[in-house]
Image 1 (cartoon, rainbow, N blue to C red):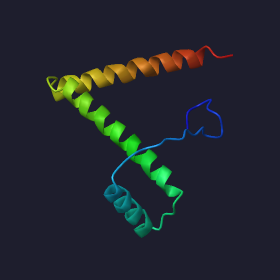
Image 2: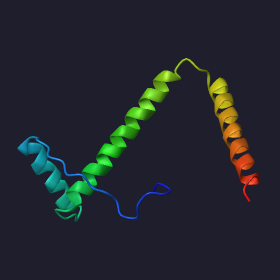
Image 3: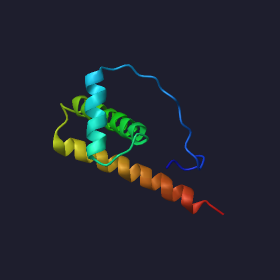
Image 4: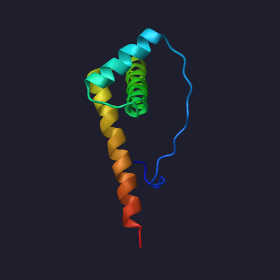
Length: 95
């Protein structure tokens, strides 16, 4: 959960159009997993989040494909060090 977000999640209704074959396959799969009709939304949301994550990872890999593993690790280490330093500076200045 995101810090400062409302305790109840806001929902958006979505209308989708897809083949009867895909609908039947998904509902059959969900039923075999013991999931109920209301679980369809949860399944779709999880699938969308997973797909976005996969695309993000693919894009990141493509963007850094020319960087050697050693250089990439150095960039990661430097970034982590910078973020930690900022965090600890802010923490030290709290009343």
